[in-house]
Image (cartoon, rainbow, N blue to C red; front, side, top):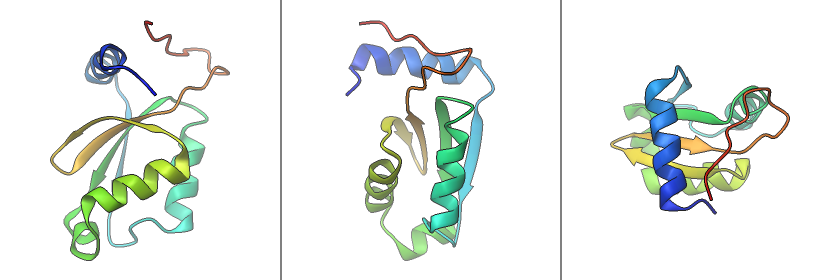
Length: 101
């Protein structure tokens, strides 16, 4: 689990760099969407996910967040509205994020 200080560090990195943004719509969290997000963690550690209105018509946002983070084994850094920032460390990356302790 990451600390509040580490979350602040990750928010700064996300704000200052170009990170991947994924939109989740009416297909919600099917196997292909989860697989695509999981594959994205092979090339980056921070991903921004936006839930479109069509996704929220069928499911509760908090339920979607819990399902997504449990499938991907990642941490929620921040949620603002229908957008969330998730983090999963990957030591194999050249530009690996080193979090403060």
